[in-house]
Image 1 (spheres, rainbow, N blue to C red):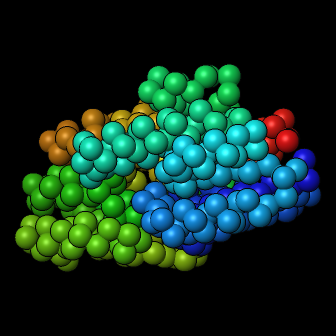
Image 2 (cartoon, helix red, strand yellow):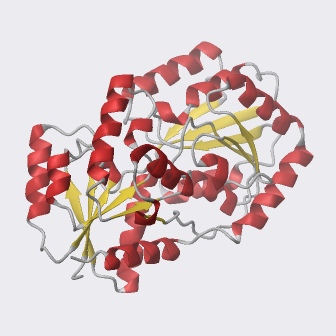
Image 3 (cartoon, rainbow, N blue to C red):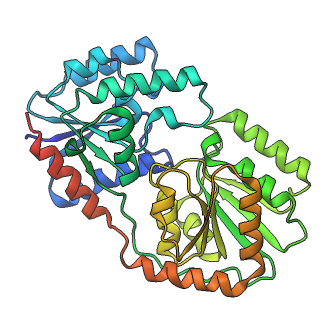
Length: 349
């Protein structure tokens, strides 16, 4: 294998878990001396135009044949089978979660994504999944043989333990882009009937990926009369994000589905108590002792969980201690980078 060509669609600097995973693998490989480079694909994926597909074909076919193509699933899962078949023997597919499971798709759109991704995955020599949950989905629903799938969970960096807000109002923190799958509308609906309790919520995440969702959330917040207590902070730089974690009292993740849930391990690394859903891999990413878990999309259950943790400082502290204890056993990025590099080495053309 001469090198790993890591093909990722769009802007690698975007503040999402999937792009963060790609950035960290490339950074770790540089430090490890692994020959690898980033190949930027068009940003139209997972809904590429004909122009995007033509550009993608040219970019990939121009790569040296003895290199391994590690292709992010946001693009590979949307490849027409004709492109995927033409790359057979050279591809490692990286799947964070199946494209068909994105919230907001019509049944027809979801079915088409599932059909196309299953067809493309048949031609991948190996598959890297970012969680055990994603691996199980690929085996059960996409007919990918289990022995072709390797799990490489995202890493997390060591961090200082959060000190909390030290104020009467309990600081709630949620992190993730404002897209339908994150379930922020459910969180706001849950909080609307907890206005008598002392809390403030900060949601950190890109707000331009789904403009209609962002507009709807802003309207929902205004309608509830909670505009002075809920802050949509947008994207924060790393120092600002670290500060937000440091002053939080409770981390909340209302996602409908997660392929892994990197923000959960970020919260664990800082010893924060967690309230999250059981959507996708989130049910497994955070240990039960540290996280109170509720069904996804259930505002009443989320409200009950919030009420419990807002009212009981002892319970928050118990879960915070469990989170801090779990922090020492979290996977590191070097582990993930090593696993993926080894997979690529085994499928060298």
